[in-house]
Image (cartoon, rainbow, N blue to C red):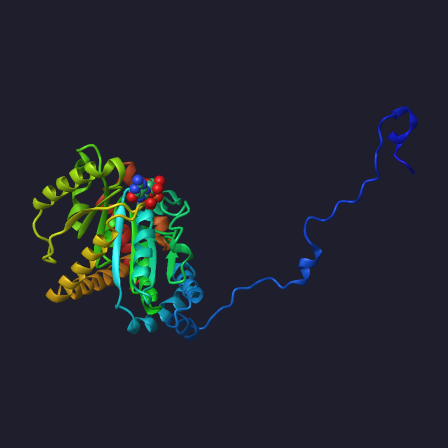
Amino acid sequence: MDHIENDDQFQGLRVNKGISEQPTVNPYLNNFKRFKRKEYSVSEYVEGILKGNITILGQAVTLIESAKYEHQAIAQEVIEKCLPYTGKSVRVGITGVPGAGKSTSIDSFGMHILKGNETSKVAVLAIDPSSELTKGSILGDKTRMERLSIEKRAFIRPSPSAGSLGGVARKTRETIILCEAAGFDKIIVETVGVGQSETAVHSMVDFFLLIQLAGTGDELQGIKRGIMEMADGIIINKADGNNIEKARLAQSHFKNALHLFPLPDSGWAPKVLTYSGYYELGIDEVWNMINEYIDFVKKNGYFDYRRNSQSRFWMYETINERLKNNFYNDPVVQKELKICEEQVLNSQMSSFAAANKVLDIYFKGHK
Ligand code: GDP
């Protein structure tokens, strides 16, 4: 039957026959098998990584980042087998406040390295301390390193997101090992200038670079003294256009400030350079400085000394992290902590007595 509104009384209106609505899910898709990621054996992972296969490298890093025990077990075996092929890269840490120009600079530095040497490969890893506090990310949310990210000889990995800073940093350090085994000879580890993340990055790189901006003359006030002391080089970004003079002024302020610090253990007096990551001015000088430093510390033995102390540091860090996790994940401890916390807050027990009580219970259970 024709539609009722096509009756003469509704002149001027014509209702067409409808068609039944198509299902929104394409039924033919059922014919395709669901894509399943291939699971590799330890030796397949190792072989792939040593051949420089980026897909396999990426999947191995995912295992490192995984909280699952079985993933961790495979990851540890892969790392162990890759270890003999590591250690040959130059590892550079880069830090600076948001907006200092880290991603712009790393994009330029990375392209500079790739252009300068046909066999060089650049890995960019990140440690984002915000993930610990907010579960969000300061570093990862924007389109970053546009040129480098499409280069075949580049591997860019955002910060592992879950876990404590110590856990995130350990994962990054393990990722460095795999990247080196995959033939990446320049490793850049980036972090944002917040909290303790600089110390973590400093403990896994050969050269620590601080990116600064020229301010209004009192820029030194905003910088934590500890970060200045850790830096092997300070670079003042955005030295372009009207900003060149200001950048030079900032350069001399930083130079003067550095004179007040004692010479670092490396014997290298940190340099202060101005450059522009965006306009690629002074990029050569920045990389020459890094190469000069590496030559210097290789000759005086500090390079190996620093890497050895980092390895020792990470051994103890890993022990500390596992002990802490084991303690806090213990259900008996968790129950007892709640009770003791209550008693401490009600002044029924001192903080120390409470801590000792819970620790005693934990240690007894593990004898
Ligand atoms: P990040 O937060 O430290 O990674 O900083 P970005 O690399 O995202 O840069 C922050 C802003 O500064 C962006 O708008 C960039 O375009 C700009 N920028 C970065 N480097 C330079 C530079 O050398 N000169 C100028 N004029 N602007 C820059």
